[in-house]
Image (cartoon, rainbow, N blue to C red; front, side, top):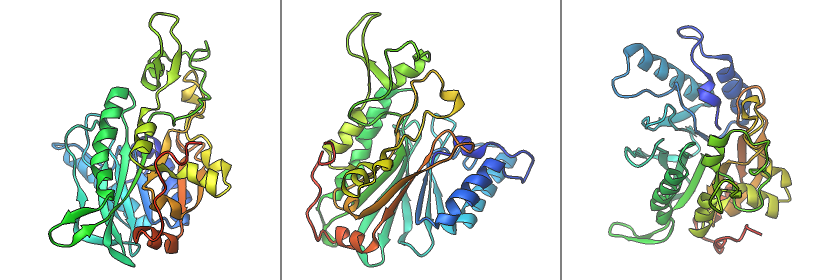
Length: 323
C-alpha cells in the first residue's frame, strides 16, 4: 500500500487524518491481512534529532496502525527522502525471531523494511519480507538499489550453514518501483500530451540523441527481477489463475498525474520461484479519493505455501511469466 504521505499530517494534535482512517480501518482492517507493506510512512517515522512532539506523533500513529491491524509493526530509518517504509506482520500468522528486522542505512534513498519470518508449519525456512520504495527521481539509483536487493534474493538458493547444513529461504519483495514493467507500454512518451518533462526523464529513456530522440519506458528493474528468478505475482495471477484484472494500473489516475503519461502499473509484488506458485488471487484495491496509488492485494494458499517452502515441486524458471 502506498498511502500518499501516510494520510497526511494530524489536523490537530492527537487526531489522525481522515484518509488514514479510511485506508487502515475502512480498507485494510476488514481484510485481516497477514502482511502489509507500506511504502510512504511519512508521519509514522522520524529522523534522528527530531523534536519530541514529532517523535511522539509518529509513535502514536505507528501504534494506532498496529492496533487496528492486530499486527507487529516494523519501520525502517528515514533516508534522503521525506518518506520511509514499514511492514506489519499479523500476530499469530508467523513465527518471529527475537531480532527479526534487518536494517540498512546506506545506498538506499528510502531504506527498505526487511523482516525475517517463519511459517509455523515449516519453521526451519526463513521468509524474507521486504517493503521497498524505489527513488522517484533517479532511475540510475533505482537500478543500483535493485541490485542491492539481490543480496537478499541470493539467500533463496541453498547455502551451507555450519549450524544447520543446507538451508533454503524464501523472498517476497513488495514495493512501489516507480518504473513500468517489461513489455509493451501504454504511456505515450513521445506525445505532446506528456507535458511533465522532468517526470519523463525519471520514467523513460531516450533511444537516440538530440531533440527528436524517441522515448521508451525504463524497465530495467523488472528485467533484473526476472533475470534473478523473482516473479511478479500479478503476472502469475493473470496467466495461471485467469485473473486479467490483476494487471490493472496502480497509479497515474490521480488529478495531479495529468501530463505524466497516464495509467501505469508501478506497484508490484515479487516472489521467488516457489512461493509465487502459492498465489491464488490478486486484486487491485481501488483507493480513489484516499491515495494516488491503488493497493495490491495478494492471496496465497497456505497449504501450497507450505509445499513451496519445502520445495515439494519445481521452481518456476526465470522469465516464465514474460510471455
